[in-house]
Image (cartoon, rainbow, N blue to C red; front, side):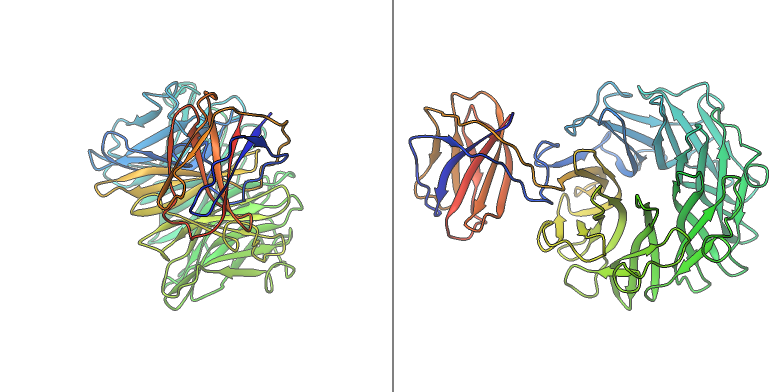
Length: 510
């Protein structure tokens, strides 16, 4: 049971009351950083003082988060995994101190771009590996403790070389029968084609899929293709999202659907393919499927020098859903022109609202940016500030992936520049108000001072030896600060950013 203590109000003067009482309900504004995660809702991870970044993330059933990417600059680029506990701390039961830095014989560069967790808890990682002659697709399977699973491939590793200049895995999905589908691209005959491969549970290519286990989609002699996201529908059909690139690098959204056997589904779009152009240059970074089967692609659209968040929704047959946005398309930006706003990941809540996670250059070189949309594509103004949230973690922040928790929280991960290196960063946000009912409680000693207050306040409840969440809200009821505090000792709260006026102070415990 959660308790919420209401202390009183401040007029940048703080009134000190001699009693403490509980309110009946608790509320936390959607879009606020989750103070129970990391430090102030943020996590910063530096591995051996080297550069690192997270390119993919997956949630385990126990709530732990597996981040996959690379560690580089101190030596050759190496595949890297990190596992976080639910509170954002490193999970010391995984690898060494919560991380795995892997090397492979004959490979001098390895990078992870995709990660998934099997039903048995084993972790599948996909990416690319370079041996000096080219780049090959790599799959690695790890046990739940971060050690390699030697029952998969060769000592836990599968490297696929199709005889071309490059094969890469940017996405992967696990079928209900345990088979693994990878999506990426292949460079052959001086052009890039979209690539799907299916592997059986032991890492061998499944010859019953496509042509000898492989589906290569050529979009034309001057058009290139790549797959960045794979989703498996309940009927087993495979929806993939990626990029079509023309001779002048004018990117377009690429959406395709395959039958279970690995061949294009002719009942979808134009013979299995749908290509969409929104602005001058368009690039999709993620895709999600709603409970009703409709498909949303997300990325960015550039109009001249202005880059904007861009989403397109399709019906289950691949036709554009005109009930979404304007003729099926939504674009939005963060208030400035000549900037780069990019959606990197989208998640769909149970109520159909869409969380777009990405980055913006509105306030600096790059900050994390979230927008929430209603099911019809309009911005949800109840989220953050007019539907938008901007977070600065480090000097330059990049978002590459996101995960939606069952408790209506969203986690984002990527990289940030700390002045010396790029390091792995993550943040977690509350998506819905937290509500609870509590009984009246009383504390004989509590302190909030000074009075009046101009730059900071001190708060403590000596008789309560636990942590709590402090909320400060303005006279309109908007929460302007949410912080995790330890009530058994004094906590200094900076109020310099607040405008003069009345404020309400509350603490939630339990």
